Image (cartoon, rainbow, N blue to C red; front, top):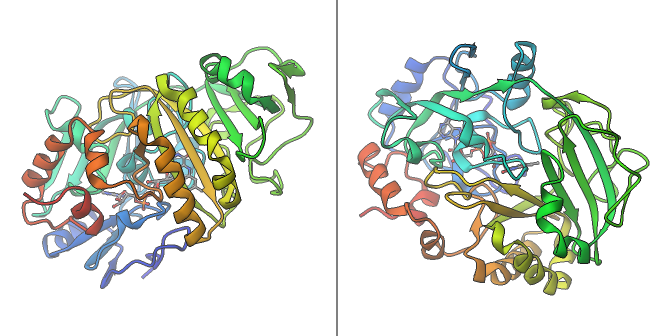
Length: 416
Ligand SMILES: Cc1cc2nc3c(=O)[nH]c(=O)nc-3n(C[C@H](O)[C@H](O)[C@H](O)COP(=O)(O)OP(=O)(O)OC[C@H]3O[C@@H](n4cnc5c(N)ncnc54)[C@H](O)[C@@H]3O)c2cc1C
């Protein structure tokens, strides 16, 4: 059996009694229908126990590979376990693109959509906003398709793996495009405070990297769709004179090309290349979403406690995510700024730093990333999701016996 025993970060050892890797949807249906407790695993890149189970852990990576572009509909239908890296190359060769990608192409489409995974860009929704239909195996082994017209659709896309085993997704595509990536260094935080919206809208996708140690943002990554060459200085920041890695001390080779060299969308929108270990590779991560209107106040709140955050931190990242209508999306009905933290893999130090961040962001009804380390109380999270009750109702309808209900789901959505 090739299903991994731990998540990518190695901080979660799966508690499953049995591991499965079905080779067909029918085999998956039999496994699900015969299980009392089952969870589906994507590529295991989440940092908490969201994918874990004490029963059957099923990888969908072995299901028949599907990539079916439909030019007339403007969609592509893909198998759930497909990694973005593989999908993107095929789509691009067919003349299509996805509207955005996360920082790494290694993750599965279904796993990314299930947790509301996102990239950056003021006009770009999370990756799940591209979903037009979801096909899934429900607890009784039935194969159902939920498309955008269905009443339950907004609850069934960012669904934390709790409604069933997703087998295929149909995604919106756009015409393929080119991107140029530029990196600036040393943006004064005083300028960021004054011109936050302008800076985050300065390119198709903008990421700010900060170690929360000084009064400057370490790096600003601008992913431009075309456009002129970037000037040598910008708002007090200086154009980098060579390729950079966002994590201090890491060589730049794992990163996508910079210095304005034009490239395909999928070779620039992620920060990391598919054939390398992404990020530092030895880390934990947390991330919190606040309303864009609170961006500067939230920045100030974090800056005020930076001496308590920075010792545990490898690097922090600030991105934007456009509002959407998906009930459990961290960007549900609010344009967001996402404050991300790549921690050193020291559980005790991370726990302390996470508490500090959560306390600092508590005035802003911050929503934690579902796939990262957080300790925000379930009742606090519930308050920030207006459709929380509707999702719980959906859970009762799709999975009345709680077959997909692991400890994570039970904690956040207790059975009625
Ligand atoms: C180095 C690194 C960089 C990252 N960068 C970003 C980033 O830029 N932006 C961001 O938002 N996040 C980021 N993440 C977090 C990551 O995108 C999410 O945790 C994502 O959910 C991982 O996808 P996965 O395929 O590994 O899913 P898993 O971690 O395997 O699973 C996540 C959830 O999806 C469910 N699931 C997976 N497949 C299915 C299926 N077929 N049917 C039903 N449920 C399913 C699981 O049960 C689980 O609940 C990063 C993580 C790492 C390790």
